[in-house]
Length: 179
Length: 179
Image 1 (tube, chains in turn purple, orange):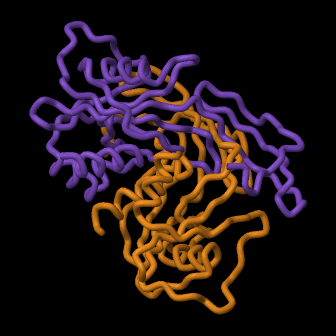
Image 2 (cartoon, each protein chain N blue to C red; image 1 turned 180 degrees about the vertical axis):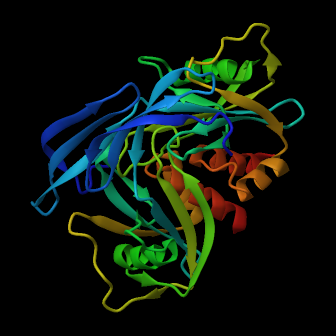
């Protein structure tokens, strides 16, 4: 797992934000030459595939500033410092959908953009959903709209590019395989 | 597609690199409050699912500095300025694998990390592969090792987290559906 390792000779901090930080590392390449790597550090995230008792999937529509449009995604959220992904999954499901579940199963982890970012997303499926009476709310800068759709409707949303992000496209393909 | 739009009131350039640039936008939220958004700009990328005449998939192992380890991925590369994704696909397949194909089909596009980055990756499948006699080489800071594996071997690599990135996990699941 260290094949073609790039050893860091220096690291320059560029930016430390609320969500991401950015640095530029100078590295020695496998052939002895030097190069630079631009690196985004991100806390990592958890996403949940919430499946209702009717076999529908719960999705959230939200505005994504980097794309300058709203897209429809599975519920997700950043890992808080020191937080276990299993707990983030429970918290985000409640905050974004008002649903609870005692039936979470790990599905898959993956790096979203390993060329420039260390973000890893952990995906869980949540079944046996129930409504939480007074659910914890969203962060103050979050605005989402809930949708519950069939697998066929979700596939149509992919074709229309209303579903357009890696984790949600993955989630719909995964559901197709298990249902 | 503009639901919950966040209007930009100011934009501050933080960093302009070789691959990414970073800015912080001040935005007005749907409720009238203000917030900031940390945004990474990336040229976008193309990835190819190369399927040999024996039904194997061609993969490349490379070191990914943000993860500080090497992972096994489908061939991919950044869009050059003004380059059509179809052309990037042909170029990257040749540079990374030495294979050519006259049979490319579009599979799927998705945003990898829509919370902080605008990167979109366009995925194609390439069939009817043939060896190019003197293929164009890799960029000078790229080092990759070629592998040709069966679908079952690729699934095992996912379980071992040697395959660990969004586009490749997607690609293997997509192959599973079509083969």
